[in-house]
Amino acid sequence: MHVLRSRKYLGKGELFMKSYLQKIGRALMLPVAVLPAAAILMGIGYWIDPAGWGAGSPIAAFLIKAGSSIIDNIPFLFAVGVALGMSKDKDGSAALSGLVAFLVVTTLLSTNTVAMLQGVDPENVNMAFSKINNAFIGMLSGIVASVMYNRFSQVQLPQALAFFSGKRLVPIMSAVSMLAISAVLYFVWPLVFSGLVNFGEAISKLGAIGAGLYGFFNRLLIPTGLHHALNAVFWFDLAGINDIGKFWAGEGTKGVTGMYQAGFFPVMMFGLPAAALAMYHTAKTKRKKQVASLMLAAGFAAFFTGVTEPLEFAFMFAAPMLYIVHAILTGLSLTVAAAFHWTAGFGFSAGLVDFALSSRLPLANKPFMLIAQGLVFAVIYYSIFRFLITKFQLNTPGREEEIEEENAQAEAAASAENKFAYMASEIYKGLGGDSNVVSVDNCVTRLRLEVKEMEKVNQHKIKATGVPGINIVGPKSIQVIVGTQVQFVADEIDKIRRK
Image 1 (cartoon, rainbow, N blue to C red):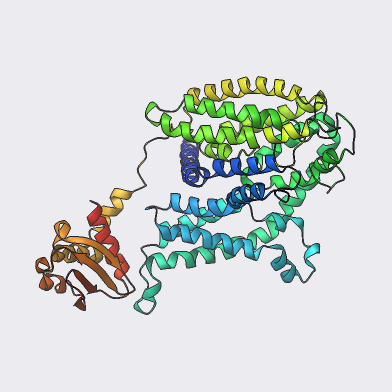
Image 2: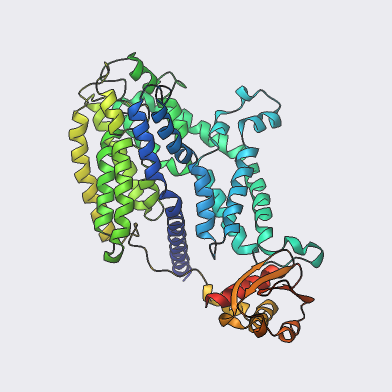
């Protein structure tokens, strides 16, 4: 019996985790939708001026800076987007709280702040803290803010602190929560980061197999932001490999230097766009047009520029199985390219722009074989993705279940019994209801309302709710003085108007 109960409990836990990951995936769709256009702008700008990144061309500089203003700030977008998407009623105060949470943790754990806390020079601070501004921290901040919003947005504080009740309390609680999380990350983040650096240095001695392991963990760690630790080992000069720098400088061994870059081209230019096609083909018929616009833009961004975040974040949480497969295939691609000594490099990312530029460099070795490899990987990606999506009914974009927000109806029913719901109902009736109320807003203590006809307003009925007073401020403008808890009455009126 105990075993059966344990299995049942585990099943519920798995279902909860699956549902929660899918919610994160849905919440990410809003910020992810912005990324493909930004990536294409950067790709075109880099194509115009590949050496100067805009220094030699005002047009290139304009395009690169316009695109990078979004791409470079993905963590901010995720903090705001996840907080908004996972809050119970998609309120703007949740989005603000996500930003507050992100600013707290990234400021507290920035290199300069940590240097001050440790009493050392900034250059002596662990490199991990220079990478704290990443997508994982953005998503974590958004999740914390959404939890705080769902928990505290309706909390009523004592009268002396009533101004900070409800939605105003959410950013405060989000900031306090991130203080505690920052304290944990202060000790945990550098340990994990340094451990991955040491791991990267160990596998760098394994040749083609090491390249494959690097590719696998590079993709697998992207949701956490810890892929930067491995990139520092293989791409830059942390451990003497400096694969990117040496390849573009022509300093290295032909067919070897570039092995930690080449295998990404078949995946980014062919594999992921083919995966996007599979997700489009398996989307529900009524959602195909919507999915097509996202997948076309994201697939083109991956092919042309090598920016894959719009595609990867579209399914990594909604269908984690697919993302693990993607990581495995990336590792396989790097192993194959390294084993056959096919090399190409990138300065921006592994897209068409960098492929065309790097294929003519001295250390490029049979780069066009990467195109042939890419065509094979396109078939593999499409076949595996389509099979897994249909076999396991995975909730990729366009296949999500029509799920209502948790307990929305139950919360509405429960709120109908509290005093604010009663006050809102009576005040709204006194104003003349839907046929007379034009708009509803509130300040710190008052409801500010616009009505069609002041003659239809029943002031006696409104005052019977116990409000301190009423002000007529214009022929169609009226204020109902409620007090510092006015937000809760305004929220209930908003619910009435939405029915």
